[in-house]
Image (cartoon, rainbow, N blue to C red; front, top):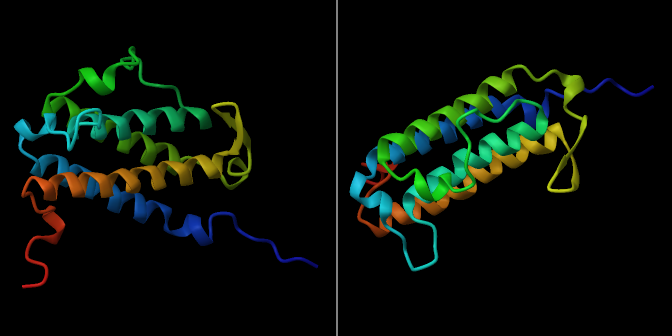
Length: 163
């Protein structure tokens, strides 16, 4: 006989805590970066600070929509990453996307996790999409920490570390 495995154990046991952690860090970093640095980019052709934050927000909504929730009604343009650049607007989009993932994940049932979905013509699962969302957010968190440090901004959670 095989033991029943609860799909919400293991990786899923820690998802909400990890999502809360990366969400708090993303918002804290966005708030710590001065508005004039939202247009900064490390080199021509590389995403600016605001574009990276918007990329995270838009990707959260898109990847989440693959699992079922609808895209926001005001996500009407493919150019939002480049046209939404003001710090308050960027932070609003970011917070909305982080909250959307948190709320949607709270409603996921164990039976939903292995459900097959398609993303960019590739087979995936609901479980895989949620993992992609959190990995993607953390990937770009690292990028934004590098951006901040290149501009002399210390991430708020590391202020005072090592003293």
